Length: 231
Image (cartoon, rainbow, N blue to C red; front, side):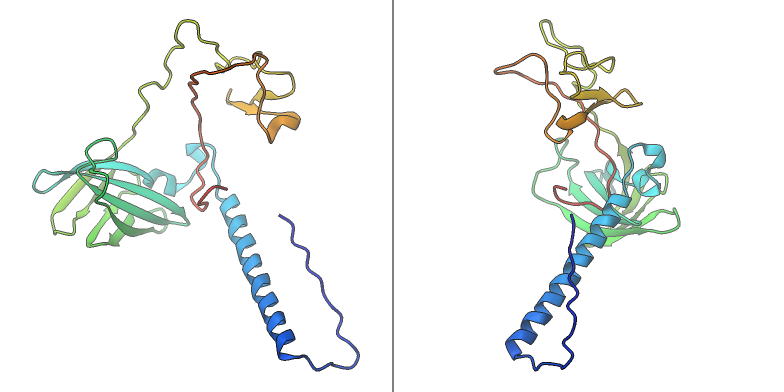
């Protein structure tokens, strides 16, 4: 995004501005400040990007899904979302995690903060607790003053790494990009697929053409805690 700023030279003799002109000038200044702030936030979001866990920093360890029970034995889940710079949102889900016990409606949000690489302290909606800096345990009290202990879990798709079925066309298996048109696809140092050349913005192009099909796709996304929405 490029922003062009024009500086207007003042006349030798100050001219009296109308109220309408003054109002337009103030509005323009407000918009300029808003645009500058937006660009600064976008720059901060781009600055907090990690492609590998080893370079993601302490917030990445804390973020994730946690599952366990409260004092009376009832299951409860929590999703801890990193927002960047040691800030978090914790979403408590009575009954368990989505797809694993949660009823799909009851949810309670709390804010969390971690400083100096320490645990994230969470409070809100009557809940309180802390997430270990190692991202292993989330302990605290519910809005009903019951203790909870939740352990981090990593859920994976049951089809992750599955062998292709008989008759499937394998478009990429981490070995080469021979199924793609020359100059449109490649592999990075990690043997991950990526579009290349002029097609990078619109996508890589297969050599074969397909009609109706089922696609099995495995992908990775970067850790971007300061970003939100579809950027």
